[in-house]
Length: 499
Image 1 (cartoon, rainbow, N blue to C red):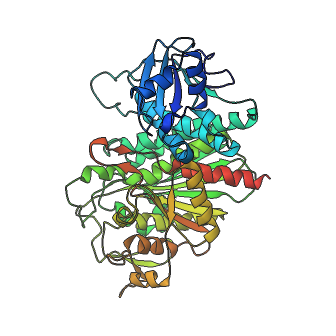
Image 2 (tube, rainbow, N blue to C red):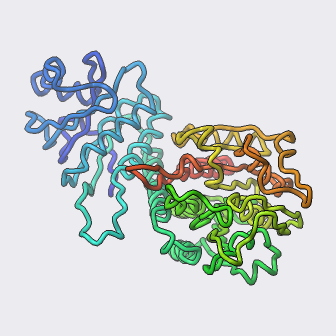
Image 3 (cartoon, rainbow, N blue to C red):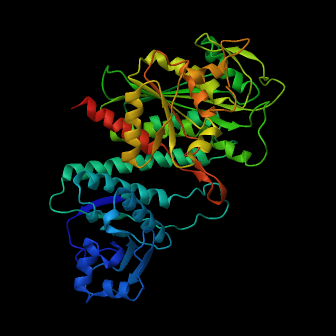
């Protein structure tokens, strides 16, 4: 898709569909007011007759509107004008994208952007309008035997701007939105693939495939033999029951010479049965999404490489399966991690932390500025925060603040959760240095405290994405989150380093 900034008025722009908005109390958007004036009060007449609804999330398509160059008008509700902000703007754009899915339109003009008066919010809004369009166009039907459904796939999207718009900033917003949307697409596709296709080996090949598109991006893959030499016995304990070999995937993006890198560590359990501590059968198919941390890390790397940011970024993905078998790890087994710490495995379904701890220890060699792990780690996170926000736990207050702010700006929101010695005490073991679970109470936090034992020498944050990485039920599927949050964080880090 091509994105074209346009200073033309709403009546001048030619398109297959022009998107405008109306507020409650018959208040018109900038574009709606111009069209209303040129079409004998058409918009206000529709509002007065009750044929247009101005509540946020509502819409109607009008055809044969006189004195405009657009073939159709898509009128979306914007709610109360005094409450209209970036969240409402994004929702209006999502409404518009969904409304157009059944139409074969090649040229779209989005004039909702004129409602964002604040300059900073305007450029942020341009990003959200593009991301919303991509998100709502997404369908995963590659594995269906019937032909793919024809969907709305525009070639050109015009975005309304005013005379004061900074052309450099608008182009930057467009580039960032396009890259983030591409990264989310990668994360969604990887997440939605079934475990018989998306194996650890498949993840490694996909990372290598992405690498071929960028000169300053390289990927290496460590096999189980090398892991044994590295003494990654915690990671290997999870894959002990599976015939599919584990992989440690490391991606290197070099855009800033010798500066300390940012490091993302993504949990890549391509299917989690729970091992010997086997899960209930209901909804176990959704455990193919237990690699969404890995998918997020790989998708985010693709964003940064596409934007060619002047920053160094490394991705570490421990990828494996967790299956029960005669060779599987048993509850009560004790393993030695790469760090040298011994772990009593009280529950084999608390496997994510077992692969992440060795990956975090491995990543310490990169001497990162910040290290962030991303994992669908605990059901306790979903109980605490629902499916709305990613949980942040960190040993560095500044890092957790930066991630939280990036979540707010990207509208991929997160929430800071506490950590502390009182939670760490729950991980005590009678027989090893620590246990891999700390009991039911505070399960999300004790899981983070476990990882914190392996990150004492680094500025580290843990993102629990169990509630945000995928949607269950009839609309089951990967969300691509938190690619926007992490991309925004890295963009801001890149900007800070070059101010």
